[in-house]
Amino acid sequence: MKLQQLLSFTRKAVDEYQMIEAGDKIAVGISGGKDSLTLLYALAGLRRFYPKPFDLIAITVDLGYEKFHTEKIEALCQELDVPYHVVKTDIARILFEERKESNPCSLCAKMRKGALNEAVKKLGCNKVAYAHHKDDIVETMILSLIFEGRFHSFSPKSYLDRMDLTVIRPMMYVNEADVIGFQRKYELPVEKSRCPVDGLTKRQYAKDLIHQLELDHPGAKQRMFTAIINGNIEGWPVRLTREEVKSSS
View 1 (cartoon, one colour):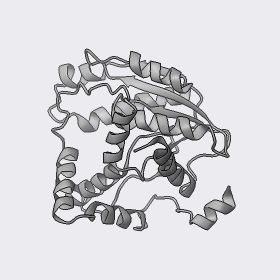
View 2: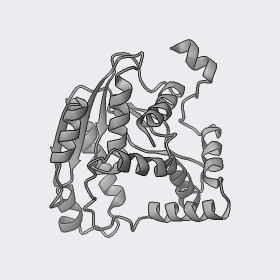
View 3: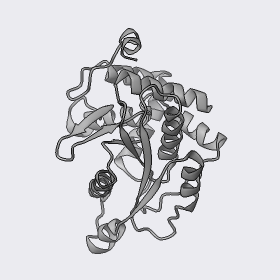
């Protein structure tokens, strides 16, 4: 996937769900993975021409794993003219040494998001962008169906009233395969996950299940995604039509 295609998908999401307003200061959470680095590229590119001007910063929550390095990420941020901040934490030590968690993902996500949101507010941002893509949205729906018994997935845009912070997901229309292609084409400096349970999660199970469904029934993933965005899920914002997007520009 080329940058122009990435920007097109990103703008579609931003426009249809009114993710960005003039004067916003948006933080991008950078884990070091392909998704968050691609999102950084997308929003830095969109910032150059979007009719509603906005500021952008990047934040990495360092979980405390050994051999996790941020120098190349910092260099990319400098190249893209995006201020970069690293938040040091002891989350890894707390999870695996103190608590000895066997299923740490939920608690880790909660602690990581808490540290990120706190940094976002300290740096004066009113919005934070997460790098969830189309596959993430479908996987979340599958997990919700199997383990919660409800048709649900996370929203393109949501307001955290306790934090006075808006979460946006500008890559919701981008396939993971395209993210992989973009990362390779532009040689993004991916920092490998140091988590000892990486790839052994329920989300990996959902990913494998959807992959098999796609092999058996080509187009299944896209049909599931279409069902999600047309499903009137509670908490989801109204999606603007093409005509409404044009009139709001």
